[in-house]
Image (cartoon, rainbow, N blue to C red; front, side, top):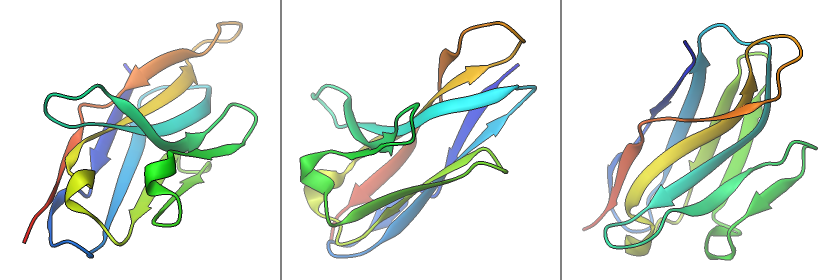
Amino acid sequence: QVQLVESGGGLVQPGGSLRLSCSVAGSILGVYAMAWHRQAPGKERELVAGFTKGGEIKYADSVKGRFTVSRDNAKSTLYLQMDMLKPEDAAVYYCNADITTRTGWQPAPYWGKGTQVTVSS
């Protein structure tokens, strides 16, 4: 069974930093696109930052210059360094990855359970 496990969320003051991690656990053959999404109360889930299947990095306009996404393919881990955090960044952050588990199968999307980020003084 494949699981995505997020960690690193918490409470931080405006202007502060947090680093989120997302690890893939389970029997897998390959991890392709990986991304961070977030959902604030009353709002739709939105893409924050991530890697496409081809390795291109994408950022939401609202986080460009403040957030940095990276990945360690050897560890099947995705990171999100969040700096200069603002109250509007507060949300539950979810990790998403397209993963193959069997030879010949197409990648399937998996989601983590999310980690809460609160930005408040």
